[in-house]
Image (tube, rainbow, N blue to C red):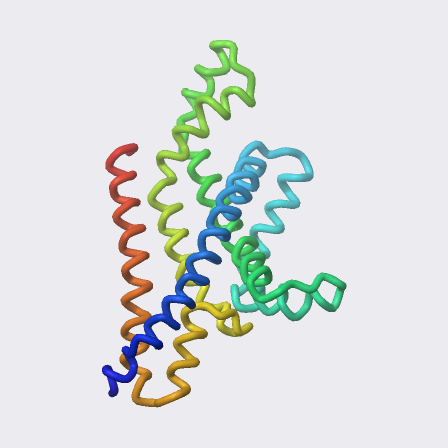
Length: 216
């Protein structure tokens, strides 16, 4: 193991550039997944005719597919039907499709956890269904959803590493390039990569705990 050679300034900078891509992809994917996850979860909770059933089929289908297959589909299959995406766009689309379905189930479960008595009380006080959902159900449900949502965000950050299969220049891709120079770099580089992932994910878990203590 060559720690000195593996941790040269040029290698560190190269890994940080890859990690910046990882964080950018994760940030965009988390933001979009959160928006679409809430939309899908709410629509399934409200049991809108036809739409709710179609979304249920969509969610169950995506949840039972491997993320790797979805990434391959967005990058290799979509161009066959005229939709060509670059590596970053393909990775983000795949992550959003996969993670938003996971988040939608968290949202739906959170909404279902609200006691029916509160809903009945809100309706009897004159609020319509949408007002009850917006002012009574959703705010309480979101507080209860904080820990599982942050856990899903942590999973998403780790899932960005799957984009290495389409050669997205993210952290794992840059680690492999460095490892290809010298087999003695493999263990030192993977240790450093692990520390990078751990640091960000641990910070997210701390945020989750603080939010959980504050709102629950």
